[in-house]
Length: 111
Image 1 (cartoon, rainbow, N blue to C red):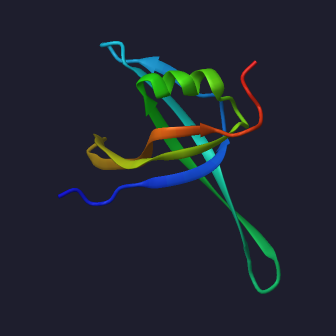
Image 2: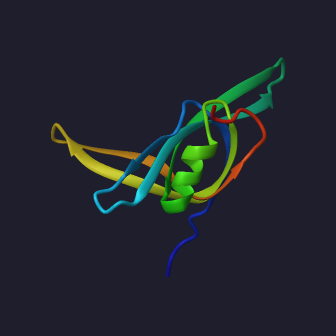
């Protein structure tokens, strides 16, 4: 049985997306988004920003590369993936989001 692994995020690209291809010709597009959250304390309003790494594959990757640019708004529906590796005899890991459905929001487009 698979556990539920579903993510919905909306934010703005922090840099232009990077498109690459595997040795078998599969497209991969990687980009990062800033997700902003405002909340109130007793005395003021605070901003909290999370930076999230996104990875898309195949035709979705090619579409992201064509339509996204730094500052562009995007809505990402996908799943969490944890990458693990060893570096200098230490276990390392990071969380990325595999974007399975991407919505391009109004705003800056590539020139």
